[in-house]
Image (cartoon, rainbow, N blue to C red; front, side, top):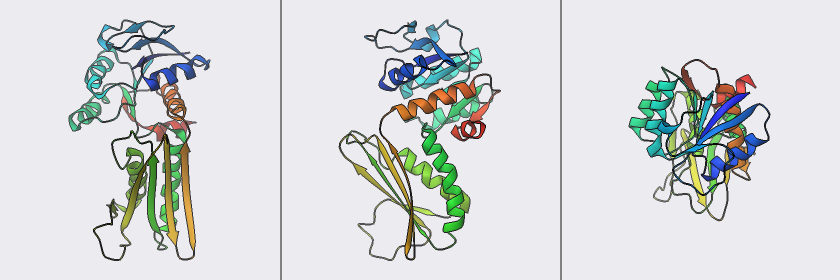
Length: 253
């Protein structure tokens, strides 16, 4: 059985993941890390990762960006693989992740959903056929009214998966309100919608002459991200040092 530490165990995602692991016979939470109290956890909880003295096979991180530096130091020192899910990291932190991955297994992805990561793979195949045939590409993403960044990191990851197939020759267009010109063939339009409690909704539209093909993904709860993180943790435990992402998890499934 895989022994896991939940870094950020008392946050919303931490509690979601704890609930998922509780019902999974292949993995168990042996400890948690969170500076905030008030949650009755069935495992020991430490205020910082440096205080944790419980042995584990993997760490799942859904904490604050400020805590990532200490987490990486711990993982390298203890040689404990880490599924890194925290967003909003600085350029310096991303560089530190690259360095840490030379010493220990690190898995990081723009979106932990197994569905989204399968879609990333499918889009490459679709774009290779449809883009040369003259299909225009548009992405529409929808999220709740509390989300502060736009477009979403997932929308950009979807665009990047397409653009990589064409040596990044496509330009991303986020706003056409100031343009009075015909759409370029070498652009990917990305639009953001914010409202209500939408967890996450992404449409990738390939619009051709007299036909439209749309790839859609809808997340109805945060549990889809938690399920992906748990699968990633089971995959990463025991892996050699390296920089992994969710495509590796899907390939092994």
